[in-house]
Length: 344
Image (cartoon, rainbow, N blue to C red; front, side, top):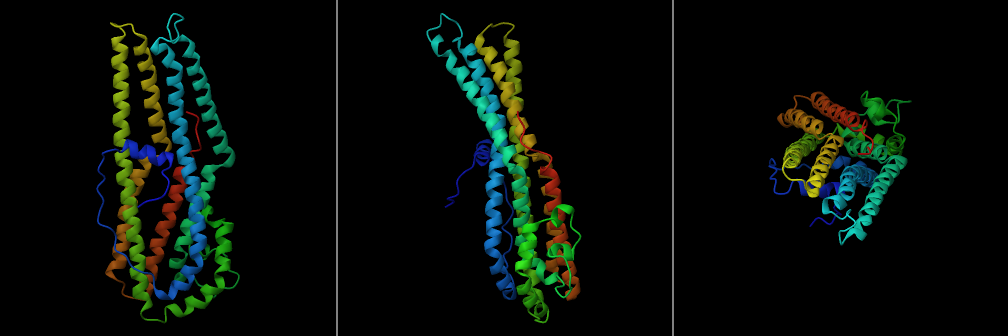
């Protein structure tokens, strides 16, 4: 049973995808890492878990915040129009004395939106999420990277990724990751030189790397399916809301009712809020990016599944796969970074 709390953005996604069936491929094959790497994996486990917990915390805050901002903005419109729609603004209405409560609710809602925006920008939830997620991902792949690193070079960069690849600037300036690499340098120097001397290591390493890539392929397939379904559902809802708005505006030619004014005011606000939250999440670009990455991860995993003619070829194949993962992470950064919290 899943005991994790359901965060607001997750709850909204669950509501919007109610009764939507998302087909999934078969679960990816599992493979245990080579036992020779177990000491390094054990040494990195706690730090990776801490990075991952921080990434989840700030990611939930940031994504929940922009969903709340957009939906609360629509709710503020509803609070403003309800007294008119219900007729409570008329002095002769028996509930006229309570009309002011909607004004108070509207001001409180606008205050909540402003507070969310201020708190999220001040604490920089987006940047905290990006940094922690990057550190968590790169720490996770360090045991896969370690056998490819030349630990015999003196004066080399502390960051193992910088030693092996030429990652983008965002992946070169990560003090926490550099500290993690330094802390495990001695252990890696002790383990790695003897790894490739063991004839059982290369096949086990290739199977494990292929399983990691299959896991990435499965993850990106899930993201692609979810984002595609979410866009379809929200586009359908917003189209229905604007159609109802048009119908209400047309009905005004024949029926002069305050409640029609309320509907033709609130429905566009709700539709705009849903569409704004969808745009803020970059759902469309995530869908197409994940679809492309699913195919690329499958191709890379297939190369390892077929086996290599030599250890050098297998090492090159794993290095290419890690390069793909680094590029994917850079793409994700460029996708998310331009979007800070927005006032709807």
